[in-house]
Amino acid sequence: MEIKKDSKVKKLKAKLLEQNKELKSAKKEIVRLQKEIIHLDAQKEEFISMAAHELRAPTTAIKGYISMVLEGDAGDISERARGFLTDARATNERLIRLVSNMLNVSRIEKGKIVYQLERVSLGKVALQVYDDFKYEAGRKNLKFTVKASKNVNDHIYIDPNRVHEVVTNLVSNAIKYTDVGQVSIRVKKSDDNKYVRLEVEDSGPGIAEEERSKLFKKFYRINTTAGKTIGTGLGLYICKLIVKNFKGKIGVTSRYDKGSIFWVELPLIEDL
Ligand SMILES: Nc1ncnc2c1ncn2[C@@H]1O[C@H](COP(=O)(O)OP(=O)(O)O)[C@@H](O)[C@H]1O
Ligand SMILES: [Mg+2]
Image 1 (spheres, rainbow, N blue to C red):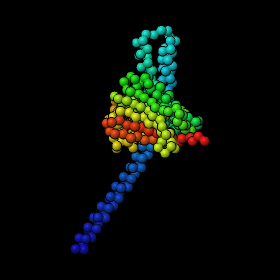
Image 2: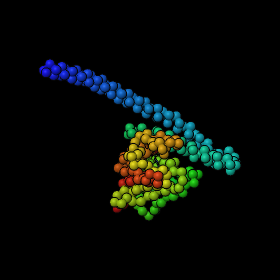
Image 3: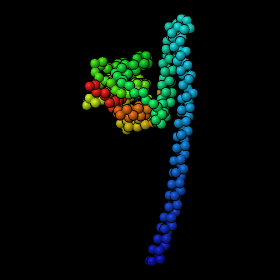
Image 4: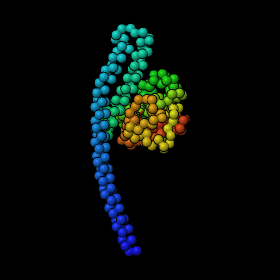
């Protein structure tokens, strides 16, 4: 009986030792993989930022040439040519936005951006962005509206370029991912009157509950909605970084298949 027990203990001991060895080598492998991931991540960052830099100059040049021709610098052009060029300009604008997201993400992450703080009316930003996207929304036959009351205090203390970027990303998504129906932008005060709230509502595919928290992560795209479109999955991540930096909040409410409302709240400057 004793002997049997002894050999059982021995066997178990050997097994344990074996498992311990395996664990150690697994741990080593994990450390190695972690290092590799960090290295790959750095390489990816470097590639993105290099690609964005290289793309910036040509896209800006294209923008300039298209504008010149549209403004008549090359003589009269036919309505048909004007139509094609207007399309080309809108596509190029999309490319410029993409490149700007790629460039800005690492700058913002590394805290390399110097913010120029100003008193900004969020309603005015909404109206500007509305103008920027009127054409694109029209092309997709979407009903596109903006509602921002001029009589309401909607001032925030923020870098105007950065808040413009946030609203642009939300509106461009709404239009990009909505095939039929409407996109509307609204600016109002938050329920507690401490924030200015901007909402971008669309009648697009909506976002399933399990995806909602992941959307704001870096590079995250939902296959079912993003599938056919070009994009980087950086837009909402950048929005979140910016909004957080200015002590605001960002989120989404959505009913799957019924569209989404992306919203941002930024601290209101109280007028004395
Ligand atoms: N209004 C929207 N309706 C449906 N899906 C959306 C909407 N906005 C964003 N998404 C989803 O969230 C993902 C992340 O958005 P974003 O960070 O802007 O990256 P990108 O637009 O480059 O893919 C998109 O790929 C898309 O799947
Ligand atoms: Mg986007």
